[in-house]
Length: 296
Image (cartoon, helix red, strand yellow):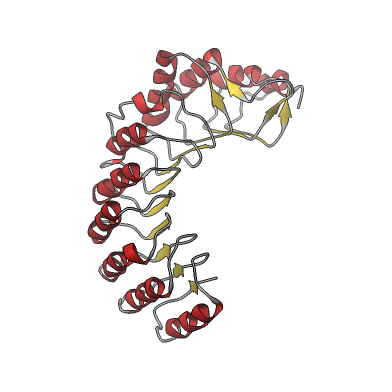
């Protein structure tokens, strides 16, 4: 891919540029091309430089900002791309990235986002999908992000590495969103946010919820009660938690008590013995409205 940067200007008609899992000589010529291009879908995913980190520095970030503000952007995906610039440059970049009125999907995975917590998110977000997995968004950043999520168009949200306060921020804003699909990964489960989730869940539009939060039986009974009151929720994934037989049984019975069909109830990688799994399978078999339940 040494000659990619030199070759790109010959492809002025490009609308999609996907540079994934390749080794390139430099990123600067690519970003220079993107600046004045008509590209509406840009993917920079796990590319590697020969003698430097895969990073966008001040000039490159300014070029991306110009591109974002002069084109009807549909999809952006940055994975393992580092941003290095001063506060004002990053502020303008984040503003362009998160306020694009045409953006449908934004993925920023396994990136460091310097100065992200200072972005105000004063306007509701327009994209339908927002994936920030592995981007180390801290509590201040999540608090500001939730301001932009409130009354936004976002239907799918993916976050991980959150502390308990951050999870509580997200859970509290749920009733004020159009979320249909939410993935939350954290190592901390607390009574406060678990009870808040149980309270909010019936007020949401959620159809698919994944929680990997070290939930144990002490927290899950309120969630089971909320599940029975949330017919629109079609799939619930509680994977890699700390649920035992009592908690998983409560969830299965709550799902079975609904008129709605549960397409997927995933309880895998919890603390269930082989005997527990067999017993749980028997209980699931009593309910015709549980299409699939995974417990291993």
